[in-house]
Length: 220
Figure 1 (spheres, rainbow, N blue to C red):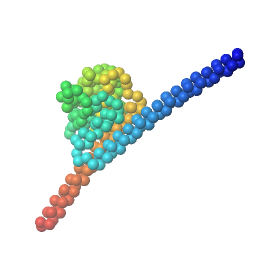
Figure 2 (figure 1 turned 180 degrees about the vertical axis):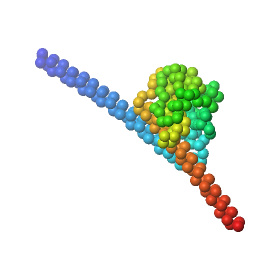
Figure 3 (figure 1 turned 180 degrees about the horizontal axis):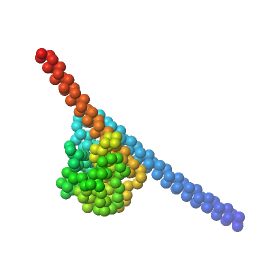
Figure 4 (figure 1 turned 30 degrees about the vertical axis):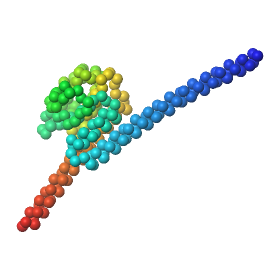
């Protein structure tokens, strides 16, 4: 009877260990599935942005379709894209998603403070904080009172800075390293979209000029 009890106890312990191992395996598999799903979504976003660059007729159309995808991929609560104005003395709001309506006027045009101007003058690391009100390098227009967490990445073409992609979250849960890398990569992708658009515009202008010159020659 004692031997039988010991055997039963050993079997029960073995069953518990197997159940625990199975539970841990399920957790690992679930984590892997989440990572695969996240990476798939990120790759899909990059692919969609590339396709948009080739198809969209103008930047407004590109931004309208791109911004919701970026919001979803970065798991932000709101985002906005600011680009340099014509003389590079300030920024203008090129696109946004989920910004509170009261914040739109303050973000339409943003003057460049000295520290922020220096940050935009050459390639720099992104600006990240979980206490947005204290990030003094940012112009006050960007420090929206509804949000605590902020991540700002430069939009650039090579070393030429074109603007900034801003991602906001309500709570103090910061952006992880993978998320920061993703936002930086998406900001660089936005730079590629701008470059593609400009190259297309140049090609169209050259085509129009060539057609005018051809018509002028025909008239002569």
